[in-house]
Image 1: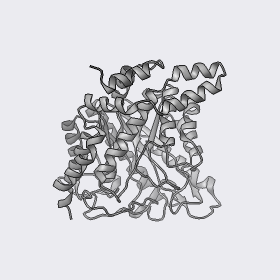
Image 2 (image 1 turned 30 degrees about the vertical axis):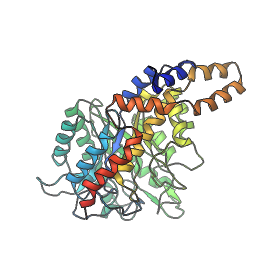
Image 3 (image 1 turned 180 degrees about the vertical axis):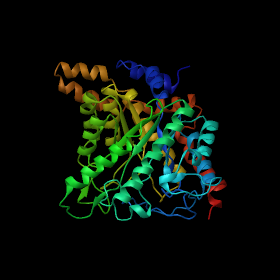
Length: 418
């Protein structure tokens, strides 16, 4: 008896697409799920701490925000159960567990403050990635960290990032998989600066000091992340795309490109083919900007679809670490995790199912009508049936059951949080 999936497989096969091969490739992709959606980027350094500094804002006060590490882990466990496949967790340094050690400032954090996270991740069967946290701290209140004029403040943040790298290497060694450590700093100014070179020179020197600490790439892979502008840094961001592109190429680090960190008319997808001509490994932060870097929940819009298509067309999926970076406090946070993560995976599945070989044939023949017509036909191919089959094989709920799953968790768990 033929099923909807069988019909979908035949439809793709008629265009030269092997559905089973696409599913197999998707199964090998691990998203970097971000820890900070469940608590609005608050972290747990201090009880009742709120996000502050660095131009980051979270809108909304929907009930059920994780208030402590235990609640955050409970939400993450549920979120992972709703995301088909095996994925990773990206931690920020501000989520340290001081319950057994007592509090220390960020320049003194170490693996012992994240041991419980490693134990938890091991039990869950997931790998950990890490991020230095250079915001929401008194020494970041004026908007500068690694490029600060004050050497004492620069040294504090250099020490912090070094410690973050040590923690990352510890994770990588223990889990048998390199930990991706990402560095983003908020440094910039609201109005026009007159010493751009000075700030960027100090940032370069600070990063060089950070990387004087030699760590095995078998354990940690460092990335640097650019930004166009932020709240309070509208006129100037020290860590621009050009700065970090040059730094990553000359210092052998990964480059992180965040979909919300460019001008709204810039295409991150368009950068993929150029990037992989010169470098072999990329970190992506998949987000959704709406008029600015607003970190909306990822959906299957054109920006996402084009990004995933370019990864597939450039044969770069295996060379790209796909991390997520969105946070929305106006809706059920677990639902945000589920929709955003599943949309990223569906976008990638759609790209893996694209009849790329036939499209490229039309390209070579300069048959641009046929290319355009096939691109349009591809939009209505039965992706949903293949996605449902993928969810079934991964023992995860289909989209049709997702709303009820999230609402049941809200009723039984989230509604009790005041």
